Image (cartoon, rainbow, N blue to C red; front, side):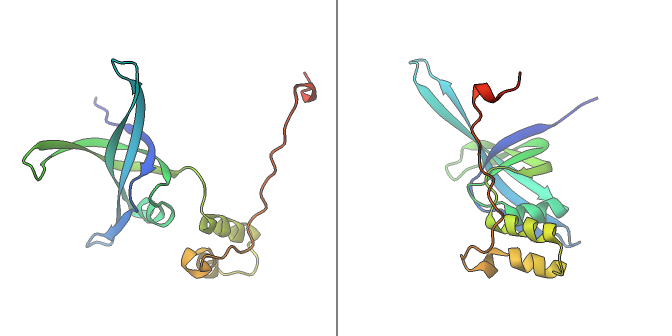
Length: 163
């Protein structure tokens, strides 16, 4: 038995690119960077960044294109393949490519996602196509409409704990 699985938590280096195959299947390509900090021989901390090309398919591809953008953090699970290519200078390079099986959006949510959730939760007389157009950032023209109330953080003191 063999197994090929990779998990990445990183940041998008550019906006995702969505295309469709001739059969109508959605394909979304993204670049995701992961950064490790480690000490060198001199004891100084260095950052080492690895770039991954990620491909998502189907509904996951459409959602990734809709809710992810440059700088957004994402959790990716998938299968890893190393692709060799020759750069402009004639050097052979290796690029890690991931065929995504799971994509989860991390970090701050956009106003569009919040509006869509609020609209869906209230589920009043709004038609589904209206809910999506309400949540569209293009329709908001940069104005913030009725946002969901923010939860207030409460400080708990040691004396407040019952045990």
